[in-house]
Length: 370
Ligand SMILES: *Cc1c(COP(=O)(O)O)cnc(C)c1O
Image 1 (spheres, helix red, strand yellow):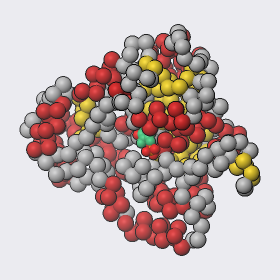
Image 2 (tube, rainbow, N blue to C red; image 1 turned 90 degrees about the vertical axis):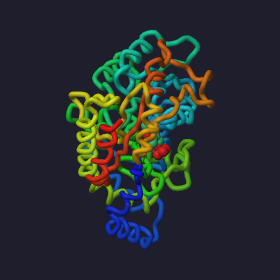
Image 3 (cartoon, rainbow, N blue to C red; image 1 turned 120 degrees about the vertical axis):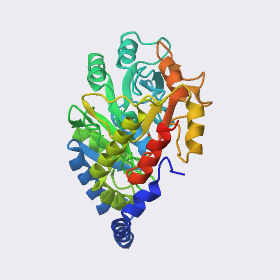
Image 4 (cartoon, rainbow, N blue to C red; image 1 turned 180 degrees about the horizontal axis):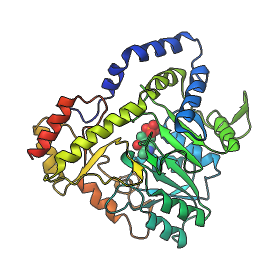
């Protein structure tokens, strides 16, 4: 069976380099917030080309910390999408803010800017004021940033980019994560830049916000043992930082490989029951996932399984259809109709940079044989 993703392959491909970095971190005698973490933060910021990076425990905390550092919390509503990892919504609730889940574009997978504009113009009754939006660059492609930025600017709404699936994706030549006031990244092992454990980072442009992030991730300390405000414990450890420094050096090449696999899939999809993912003209996609659509999704998934091709659903249920949120969480004016359609049609094909050419050809042959 060709796996849908394979983080172990990412380790094996760089084993010597990663092992050396891990041994260096273990031998250093310093395990939390030290030289490796500081070096990774500087190297990641240089690679991103904007802002400053503050490492933290995971990508969920990174969203919550970004919101808190920008004064978003109790008494605020935060708009985002339902078609995302539940982490996005979980992070908003962690701050004490209220999430408002908006629909995606009918032919895409990211926030419908028209929905955002409508909800900012006529905020739903019974909710605190909408003070922020979290835009998710899902599957590795930037959302419709020009319209989203315009809507947020017109209404004085803080914008945060959830870049957990989009390390290296660009919009008009700019890397995502450097477009809004703040951004979050996850280094969960399967992400385009993956640690071998948990990890995350927040990026911010304003030095005062960066300082606040550095405090909030460690009990609100600005000086050791003295909490200037109430914070949390969410730190990137030295072992993961050392591993991430190695992986960062291979990120651009790995993203190029993902795009090459996507090009092969695009070609194989012609005449198949699958609709290829839409690529925006002004964006470079980094294919965290290659997600096709078909009304016969369950049948096609079973046939691919029989042909030895592993697939996955990202995600089997949108947030507003999950038991913890259904009936409780607020939705935008048109509900989440496009999200509900997408839910039944999406299928993620195998996508990881270490896929061999032979595996890519086998997946393409299986698609042509459907
Ligand atoms: C993975 C992911 C997160 C959360 O990251 P963790 O490191 O698992 O906490 C947040 N948002 C999106 C869109 C993700 O894919």
